[in-house]
Length: 455
Image (cartoon, helix red, strand yellow):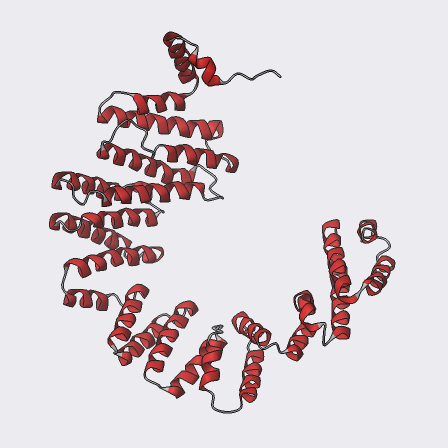
């Protein structure tokens, strides 16, 4: 058996001059390799290292974008891995400011890459999130550093947060500003941060699509007021911004914690009125109001609101309603079913299905399946023991409907797959009968006949 040579063994046998020649030749062919060597082993100063890193990033981008100027899906992960490799501590230095600069270069290019790479798999997003995490760790580690160094860190991060590269990617800008709060214990730096955030909020005015960004920025300011201001200032700040979900939710939580349930109800009702065109938020405020009613033992209000929430799709409130009902539980159950049947929205339908399933109401399930034959496969195992004949009839009806709608081999295969599952419920004889009928009915569809013959 011939032993394969290892590259390490070959290189060990070469002279220094030969090794230098090989590396130099490889570096000339591969710009990314060349710039990686310069960054990792070069003896340049801070500025020189930064220039080497910029060149390396440029060569990596060029390597993956090619002539088309775009990174296709299959290449995006490789690009992301090479960018992340720049974050590793392999640059031959423990100089934190340099490490930060390299991280910021990777961040900037990562955000720009959204414009020239197919990020269907989230690889570019992963790069950006990872570098932000690293920057956050670096900022946290500066807590005990010299004030001048901390100020340098803060200033660089704040400057970066103002970059136009984040236009359209406000979440990443906000993440940088959140990292800046690590330095907010210094009044001068805190004031600079507050000013910057205030300018961003002002620039968002009358821009509806920036409302989420404004709320996130206000949350940072609120955190700073809580940490460095008085309780009165924090309370006033929250009061002034109740039209934002975060602040109303916070105010309600605080009211509940302090036992001021009437205020919690008032805040929730105001929220329902304010957000009446947003069903998700309305449900949130109703749930908060229900929790306050419960604390005050307002049974009648609980019953009314719990039913509203149940019909809006919040199944958990069935148990709440059930516990509040003082009469016959079966009468209560049937009454709720009737109301759910009368609702036409998908949320009520989901509650209806979950309810009859958890109650194992086979009669109601059967009625539902008769009206919706396409659901027979889901419920057949549960219904077969008590309603075998009905299940077979609905199942066969479903098969004929599916066959009538099929028009190509892919769809024919799906019909045949249903037939195979039908056999487990109805047996081979019933299956064979349907196959025969389908073969006769669709005798001019050779592809269908071919698939039926495979069963």
